[in-house]
Length: 194
Image (cartoon, rainbow, N blue to C red):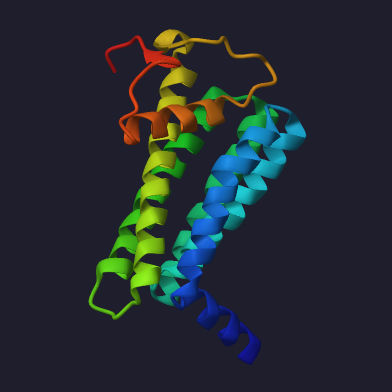
């Protein structure tokens, strides 16, 4: 029982924000580009997403009941991802992306409350939390762009056409941060009004 309390205390302290930041950075900028669209790449990506988002659940300061609810929603979201891959069902894939976006927004709100709330937090960890929020916002938009692309593949024009072994999600992570950093359009152009 003491070990479990130590484990949760470690994650809910300020350094949990740095671990969350590192795991999200590795996910978006190392795992996604390397994974590709292979089945094994998809499994590795989903496992790393699960680890990153679970560390996010542990990092935010919420009640035990809320932590259980978040963990349950996260597990359901990941099961939908796996089922969408296995069954190749569009409805399950759409529901998975939608659930992941909702989960990420809730996580951002909780991290924002943790970083800018009434509890004292050191400047270093406040910066780490702010960067984490920024990366998560970029990841949310990447998921939303991917969702639009998944619904209509003609909604974006790519300077270089997608190859079958490319990871399309990484291309939309790139596009999302291209927009967030205001670098402008160039490699990927939106074609549909939505």
